[in-house]
Every structure is written in C-alpha cells, then in structure tokens.
Image (cartoon, rainbow, N blue to C red):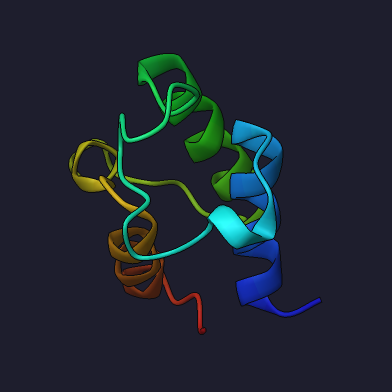
Length: 79
C-alpha cells in the first residue's frame, strides 16, 4: 500500500467517508465527522500509520486534506 493510499484510508476510517469524498475541498468542520474529536482521532491514526509524532502546531495547522499532505511531508512521508 502506498503512502497516499494509507493517508486516504486513515481519512476514510476516521470519518466514515468514501474515496470520492477525498478532495481539495475537504477541510476541518466541512463535514460533521471532522470536529475536534474526529480531528484528534485522525491525528492518532496518522501518527500510528506513519510512525511519527506530530508537533502540536502541526496538529492545529492540519486544517484540510490537502494541507495534511504538506504537513506529513515535513516528517519525511513521501507522496
């Protein structure tokens, strides 16, 4: 499984959404599942999946599907 597939799978599992829902317009609170609790669940999944520890600033700034890719790239995750 590629890193992009792992990333997508984390979003789909955390928010119970379909692959078709993953796009540049998916942002924090743009769907009911992506609230503060859902956000922390997603962060935990991504940390586990990619064996990283996100800094608090990066967790706060992780505001969209697209910006999340850039955040993970800072931690050496290649897409």
